[in-house]
Figure 1 (cartoon, rainbow, N blue to C red):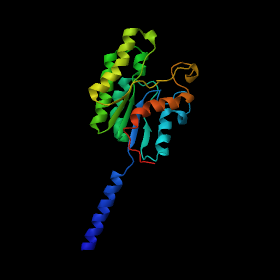
Figure 2: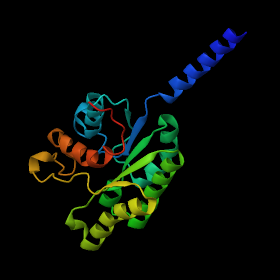
Figure 3: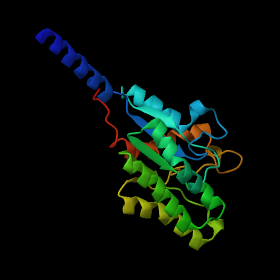
Figure 4: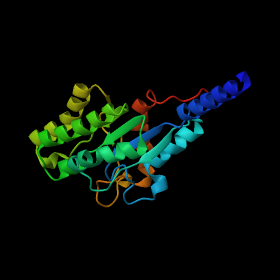
Length: 207
């Protein structure tokens, strides 16, 4: 009888171990800047992130739920489904660029970003919010409000923050013909900008 009970307990403990050791997921939730628009998927910064984690023998799985053309409203509408399907440990939110390019109200974008962040936190995920900027031709007041909105959401929601995804891109050849989307050669720079904050959030085993 004792041997049978021991076998049952051993089986149960083994099942619990496999459940808790399931690979955690990093959900990248963005627009074309994260969807590798105009370049091979394997060259995008999200794919490069997956490669870096593998090289460092991390067991994180990277899921890219980014959609080209996505707005903050679209992101807020589908975040529940994305969270339910991926059950992420970390969510990288990179949205708002298309709101800015369309001149949509900054307050509306802030509210949508907050919804995405709050939904992620409710599911137990840690959040990294990625900021964006607009060219000056959109008008100084709007450009400044847009830029500040990301930091405000990060502070209000108390989440990690990357001030500007495209920091360090200052050469024409780093952008595609539309002068908006980075080329493949620029993707490692985007990865480094994100990694500066993400590195402290992931658990990477020592070499």
